Length: 212
Image (cartoon, rainbow, N blue to C red; front, side, top):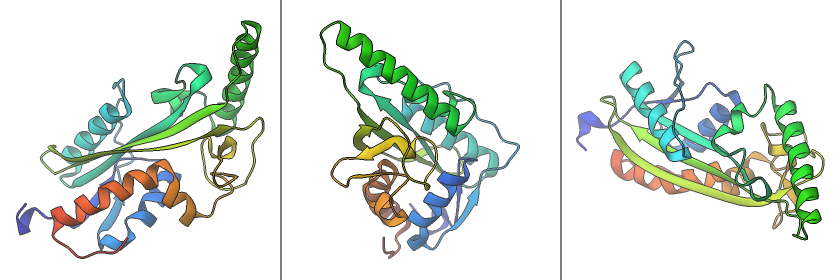
């Protein structure tokens, strides 16, 4: 990558305020100008995997803005629900509260049916974040994926975070994402894990010294 190709502006391919805030914090050490994607730009997420959707968004935003773009596609995969809501996590219902309510209701039903069959109930789940970086031509330059395993609680706990954070507990910490301070979530959360994999590659590509 030449000096002229090194990005000074990085557009985050998301309109989610929670994601934008997390990415701004995680990318603070790179000295980049972080911008949100244009409000009038809509990208249809037709991929069947998190990685595929991240690529779609990164390519679309990079070509539309003429800037480097970082996209993530992330979601919650619940064991007892066969991996749902998965890539449909953001579209599971019309609001965070409704998404959580649907998740808890369907998980309760699935576990009740499992116990009737003589199978054990499960509340195991994992958050996955796939990240993709595209250059202004729309070419994917970097891809990584981060995972954080946890347990779905029976009721929300904590006032922070967004999405499914209040019902996703990380057993090793004993806290939900909604209870964690941003630094801890940024270190052990799926997006933070993915960023820890991505940052060294970004630094190497940009030829810059930057701290995490």
